[in-house]
Length: 408
Image (tube, rainbow, N blue to C red; front, side, top):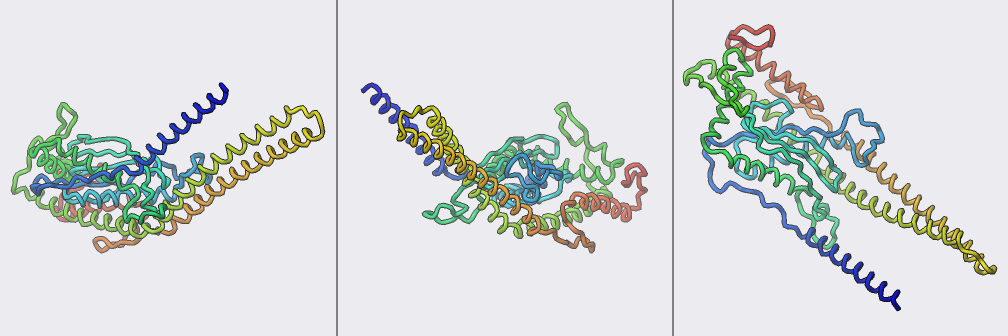
């Protein structure tokens, strides 16, 4: 009787735990989406900051072995995601009406009002983890944090009872970053925002002609860059530099267009990969759980059969049957484990073909045809060198033999 009461209490506790788990799951599923902070009024142009969203670090080595230790990591997919995420983030920022020009740029372009950079920590279609950092032209860090987001299964259309939503399954991640960027800007007053634009302008000039403009900037006691003095309004060199900067913007706009086209081309295969990955990982977890359960039950059955001391032929048959059933359960569990590995291999093969589906593009910039592939950063460096040459040709300034840039 006591044993029956104990079992009843245990069942009630288990039922209560399951109910609590289901309630938590329902609450999580019904979690409202993150609201994007929109501009409530027009921002003065002199306080409208430009944002450069750098291509993300992949978080994996190009020399990663064919069978990585961490399941679900595919270098081919990561390289594409490192370009896809910045474009989607750019679109989200532009939708807020809070910023000036928002561009996707290679790593290395930092003469901008605000630079947003990051590194992919984990991405498998089920979860997205990204380290993000925002820093302004003065060197002030607005935020540096790790964002963790679970996919919205409704976006994948896996729930047959609800229509598929036409948005990114990790849209809340982009909204959180956008909102944090707005929060960072709101900590600065109008004078500080205008100062950032001046610093970015002079930093560009100092990059072109360091001998002439390095002294216009200095570092304060907080370690931030400040303007020590301003060029005169009729400075002819600054006029030429402004023209060069416009050409640079045109090139960067071409890069941004390249990334945007790349994102559009990879949209369908990437959505399919994430959806497939989500289903495969979910199935793999279920298979592992089932396999573990079957192995445990099988081991228990075998142990029970071995420990059984048969008194007659009937009990001997039961003992033999228990051992056989246990062995079959363990074999079934192993088969499920092998099936899980097949799922991982399917993901790996799909990832390998993914990079081929989003082939690099050729873009024409300033009459030159550039092949923009994984070495976009190299092309960007070459472009900046070309800017120096253009400026030297137009101004006739001598070139510093140490830096390769025009000198004073």
